[in-house]
Length: 280
Length: 288
Image 1: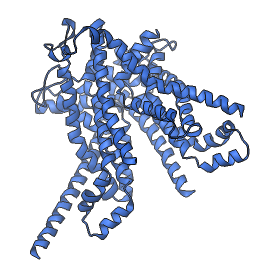
Image 2 (image 1 turned 30 degrees about the vertical axis):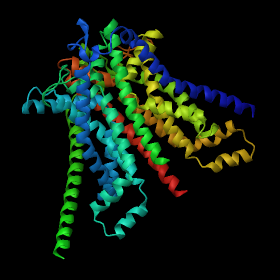
Image 3 (image 1 turned 180 degrees about the vertical axis):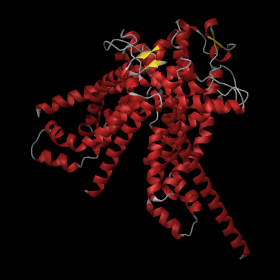
Image 4 (image 1 turned 90 degrees about the vertical axis):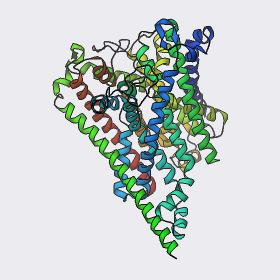
């Protein structure tokens, strides 16, 4: 049994390292953004004239609004499409078609963000440009993000719907409910928490997505007046400026990374609580 | 009576409307997927050749191939896997075999990994730059890129391995204990072989994630497109190569298409293989 104790010790050490990574990330983000967090007033991130890091103006709000607008737009498109896809797999499609479509969605989930961005840049942006220049815009960002979070919404909604007990559907059928009556009155309420958790996780993914949006959204720091205006998101800003940022500028980029991470962590905490609550 | 008939017709119309919307949405999603793949194949196939795979890029990638990029990608991937797999699998074994589900240790580790899974990749990039590149002094190198990726892969590798180990029937462990075999021996000879397909599927999913990653590598493994001489050299990953060609190199579209085609075909193969493993596992479980 001596060897078992040895193994348990090694495993504990491994697990401890794995668990510490999260703390290490938080620590280093705080460490790098500390100079700015202590020296500059936090209000400068809201009240500075704009984002001109070389002139020490660090207003993050235009980029925060860009991030939020792009994510909300993508959710508005991806939620109906993703839900319809999940309903198709569970209720509408014959078995073979359902499996085929499910696999397709899984493969779509595995396509890298840079490829979505590249396709958006070479196909969507010129199309939008013909319709309403300049093309690289909030709209392009929303469309590309939609494609990226749609598989996530579909797969989580599918899992939640598939977990609804068969008995409930038989009861609904015995009551003579129509198909939509059964879906809206029985299936969706029963699967509600799982579906919501999936949508929240998809929102978190959209907020943090960098490359695809960076490639298609135009990257102009501004409050957009229409969906055809270019925008810059927080994540894209980090990717664009990290290469040459120094001193306070670099620290502010870490602050925006910290902000992004706190947003995403809050969302995934809500999703986690929902699922836990549901299981309890 | 007429009211009921009216109500019934209304229901019929609503059902048809919903069905129409669902079919339309599915058609739209499938069409966009096919459109995207067709674009990639059409754009990249002409440029794809044996020379493209075996030559190093010249003229910022406009000419030549992607050989050095492929080598860097594989090296980054290897560093990430060599670091992340032992840690992730050790964690999974500890969580399933050595501590109860509700123990404080298990809860803490699981919570930490759950949060880690949600961290955006650009934040991993910031962390990797601050910690591996600057604090540990590894600079822009394949090593710091690979280690950053390893942090990213921990949650997915752990959760797939944990699920695989939990799916091994409890009778295996009880029989081994009854025979007086140590837990270590039972783990090596019984439980790991039984969970092997699930572990392999998890590994493939992890490889897929690593190959798809760009943002975390931007300021850790760097941009240099030469053939790397050692792990301390900077090396450009394939996904980053596509980004650079399409954004920073005018006239780089053709090689970018070809590189994207290579990356997507690679990922499709890996994901299909992972799916096959996972589904055959499910079927076997239903049979026994």
